[in-house]
Image (cartoon, rainbow, N blue to C red; front, side, top):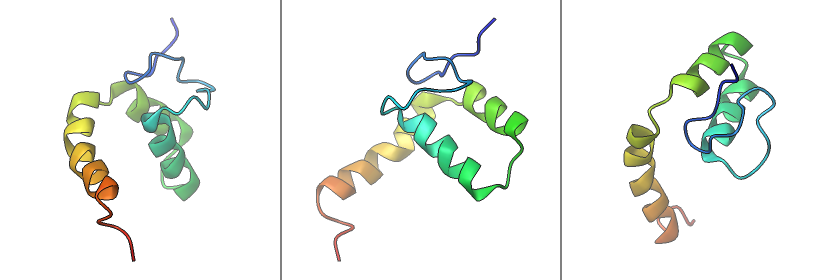
Length: 70
């Protein structure tokens, strides 16, 4: 059974660079080297994307409104 990204439904292992925000965020965690690969795969597989988007939505709105411009 292939684990699929709950956000874009692509396979998690070797997740393609298709613009998936969840894959990008997991990539940031991977770069930080605070988690094992097994932990990252579990986080990716088990993420509640609705809850994630509830939090990210306002951040994206602020970004679009120039709220992070210097």
